[in-house]
Length: 128
Image 1 (cartoon, rainbow, N blue to C red):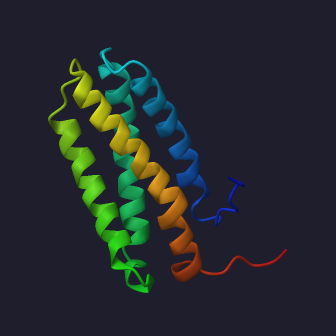
Image 2: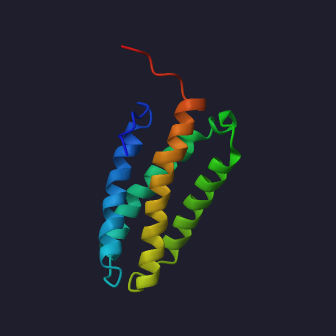
């Protein structure tokens, strides 16, 4: 897959996704381990990340031709928050569920949502 040219508005969010994906890889490599320290530390930043996205995207949703992008985005943020509130760090299934959803969510944003936002909702990138 060739690297995507990211809209400058979305670059910081993409950089934060990199750290999230690395955490998910560690959890999925050892789902039986207790990842409470890593997950809890990361979730503080993740909550800030979610809020940045939700604030940035709020005025843009009506510009997208597909409402399912917003629905998935909001549903997954809510589900990840709920999973964290009900964390079972010693449970391999919980670790797999949390890490898989978080990984898939970051990939969805990178591959689908950010592309749609750049195409339909964000101002065009000015040529240098």
